[in-house]
Image 1 (cartoon, rainbow, N blue to C red):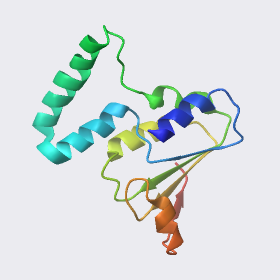
Image 2 (cartoon, rainbow, N blue to C red; image 1 turned 45 degrees about the horizontal axis):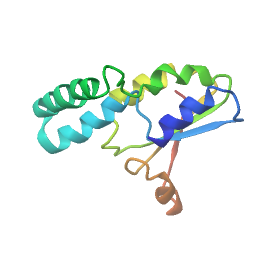
Image 3 (cartoon, helix red, strand yellow; image 1 turned 180 degrees about the horizontal axis):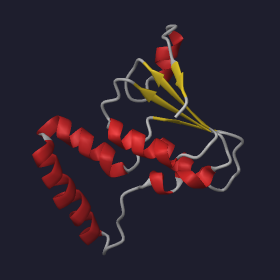
Amino acid sequence: MGAFSIIYAAGNQVFKAVVLEGVASSSYDVGFELLASKVGKVFANIIGYGIFTFGSLIWTSGKFRHSLPVDYVGGISPTPVMVIRGKDDGRVPSKSFIHFMEKVKEPKEVWIHAGRHTSSFSQTLGNTRIELLGF
């Protein structure tokens, strides 16, 4: 969730550049993927919508909203954005990552490393090859 916080702050144009790792288009995408890995997609939908979304709306008197960094990332421009992703990221679905990247404005770069979610630092220490992709 650290990348989400940076996105919201970067809209104020106070940074010279922004580097994000393991980012998704929404907090729901990450939560759903984690639940689905534990209980399967059907139960993840029931739990995700039924308990987390509707339960949270009731608990917060209708004020709860999932974090949607995808709605704010376009406001970072013209600040350069670099996004880091692991090929084996089991937390952020590829679909969510692609949707997010489609909303990032130029200038932008993507680094894909051989590791998992938010493991780029440990991956680069061992001379692991990192691909730099234009998106």
